[in-house]
Amino acid sequence: MSKTLEFIFDAGSPNAYLAWRVLPQILTRTGATLKVTPALLGGIFKATNNRPPMVAFGEVKGKMDYEMLEMRRFIARHGLTQFRMNPHFPVNTLGAMRAVTAATTLGLTEPVVEAVLAALWEQGLKLDEPEVLEAALSAAGLDAAAILSAAASLPVKQALMETTAAVVERGVFGIPSFFVGDEMWFGKERLGQVEEALNA
Image: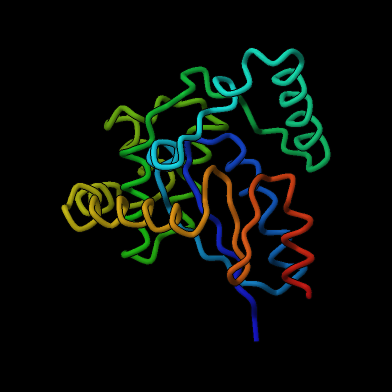
């Protein structure tokens, strides 16, 4: 019986992009299936009293320099040469995450996640502008009008809020987070442990 790797996801996290690029290899090696659970990082931070690393650790000598070093090491190890830090960071991802939530009801989760992440972390787009989000989805060959129409609906807006609250109840405090069964791991650095759990 195949195990499921659940990816708690907000496109606004560069580490979510980096993890996304590595997940296919893990899925291939383990035979696991992927479940993407969209959630709002801002809502998670508010509910857990967490803060972005640059705020939480900005005054800790050497901490953010090390965070950047670790990111460069991860990028080099996995050959993620298309990654670019978004010049508009931080980008409000509410519209994008509603689009991802709508995509889960349309059977388009992974294509929409791919389009949104590539737009943010490869193309450097300001995805909180509705017309930019629409253009990015269209450029990826998706029916942007249908996705964004669903994303604007009350059920999708409510679903994203409920999912965000639900992952907090499960212990999530940041992005990217991963679940194998009831076990949670936080951060792309834990993907080796996630893979071990899938193979157990």
